[in-house]
Length: 416
Image 1 (tube, rainbow, N blue to C red):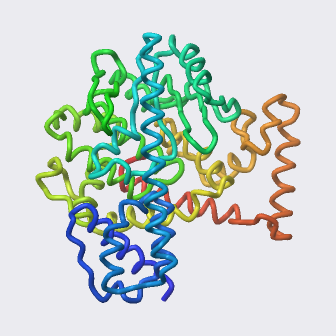
Image 2: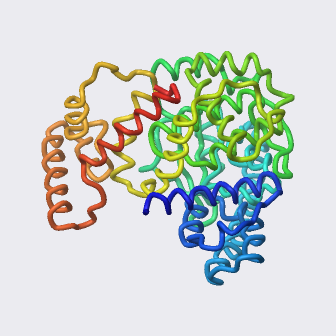
Image 3: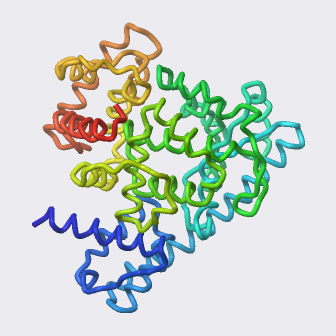
């Protein structure tokens, strides 16, 4: 019964999304007994509250539900839309300040994707991703700090600097689109030279002129970014919409043959085909809005959709997130060992290396002598949380089982 309720919630959620994308909202008796608390939670977690506001209004006019939940959609939409407007103002301020110092800033993801939506303010983002050449990084950091941004050193990496004006705007400044990841698949990405001068363009996005990378290169990056989240953390149905809406708007600027060939080299073509099929069969995209793609079986499609929904309940679990990133990174970079046994994977999880310690035990990175202490600390924390129920969320065995289940889905998507 519980599974049936969850499935009904997911089905209605997809209908709301389809209503937004097509402009044709089918309101029937299925919505009369909907769990609107769950639907709002899904909308909030996937960042779709503003997009679904109009479809929700149509449902509410025919099948009124709790006013306080309805107001959450309305008020959330207003607040989030204003935040997106403000974000674009800050982006424009940054690129203008950089231009005055002859630094070219490439904006990618956020505003570039949002421009493909009916109203860019309806696409909620948590940060703004920017790229500069390595030689310009220090000067760009100075510009951002002069504009009031604070450098978050503990959250930064070699190729990604995190800066913020608290509660206003968050910037990720990249000198490599794939962050600090290394491996055989990353070498393929590097060979595409996505950010090379020959692949840079300047165009209007969200009402302002921005430098970015060409549309085909941008789409290749979007698919990689989806794969990264699918493998390491959590992807959502919103990520699927991002990719397909961008393709629909800019398909005349994308060489389908070249695009397919490069995705095949990355091992992502099957994944992209599945996203297209989800778009056509569930979200209301028309065939002419999508490239020619090979369809997969309905069972595999359903499994992918379940992952896209189910992971939303765990994305805020920092412990689970670290475990996924640590264990799954080799699958993303293409350097995983297909012969690694389940026992070896569990040992790898139980006794992480010094450089891969989760943040809570990062003191072990200072000295190799501290690593055994950190291992003992982790085991002690587990015993306390497991038997005294302090901040206990998910047993280690259950996490490993979830990873194994995810691996099966990733294999069907040919991501590993």
